[in-house]
Image 1 (cartoon, rainbow, N blue to C red):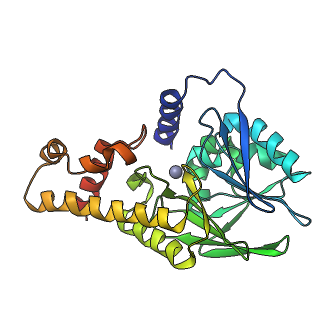
Image 2: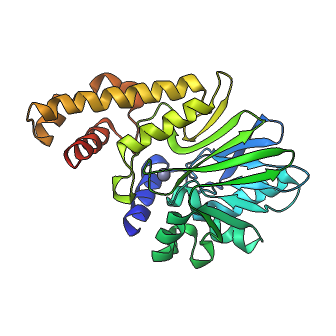
Length: 290
Ligand SMILES: [Zn+2]
């Protein structure tokens, strides 16, 4: 957990030097009553979905802890009242950081069992012990609110071992969390139970639910379509195959990095956190530990 916190801190430091400026959240209404929120001008965490309506206000993920006050201000203003439920897509601090602050406002946090287990060991990333999820599930849970069904389902060993994807049935919107990084190499957290095979299986499960005009909210990057998700799957499948071919030739990790098998993807997919080198190392490690 401590390591994750360090990663997030490094990410913050590397992505933005504009941390002194007061951060606000930008809201995009993707369909009536469903917004995507993201840090405006600085990295505040993963993409957030806000569902508002007559019954309940629901937030999916809640940014880095230090940005919780700004997030709560934006979300309650859009919702016209407090947030009733929070759903965590996974354990990383850039997705659960506002848990404690939101709990203090009366929100009830829902998450997969493994998120609570990991946060119970060290709740720092959720803003402290008050950030532990109150309601947990192992496979799926449905929210019936504001005239639609939000189907929250677990995808096993994908980005981590506690991932959830949310399908807003009837609204044609899917919140993928970090099971999709849009035109960014994905972070597959092998140390927290993630796996390349599980990641691809989760992406294909979303593909099976989506139609050509489904709006897919990724964990990071701009709003995506089914075609964008397919592009990410194609890149990951091909990247794994390229690294695997070199592993089968008996090449070492250093030799594979020197050969740079993912070079043709570098310009579009490499980014500050998951560089081409890190993606190559993750695939090497995944392939050689199976
Ligand atoms: Zn993550």
